[in-house]
Length: 208
Image 1 (cartoon, one colour):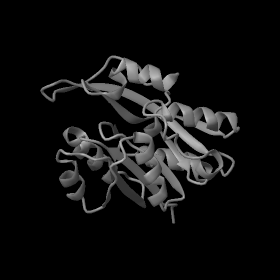
Image 2 (cartoon, rainbow, N blue to C red):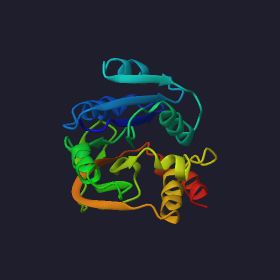
Image 3 (cartoon, helix red, strand yellow):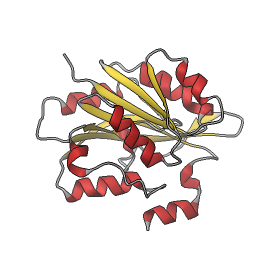
């Protein structure tokens, strides 16, 4: 029996792309998984889309922060392994299987990371792959974690609206946690006009 993987998806007014993310999460070749959507106060159709998936556990938790929403997901997660998916990104069909296969037999490894491929969606919902090679980046959705390491490192910093992923991964590195990379594209990272990282002031503040 494979270990349960908890998939945590925070969403705030992400109805435009949420169905894509949930469809690909639900279609993963790895089993068992639980999909937890944390709705951070959405006023669009995010609730209806999330609740249209019978496999999704939906939790309305208006907290105003991606870090707090992810922490809420960690409170609800039951899996031995945990991962995160932004509502505007999606995984390859076998992403969790590839990451778990590299993690399960090696108790000395704390997390496994795959490659990220960039693509873009324009204002009229046309998507196209960007001419960039896949890369390893500090993107939470490209990594599978043993849930117990969050007790060791702590959760995401609720004081950071941006950069909480970078902050957590730096803390993990400082604590000597072991990360193994696999040479497979696991995450497709969507660029669009509403990406949080488009806001230079917010991004700079988080990094500082």
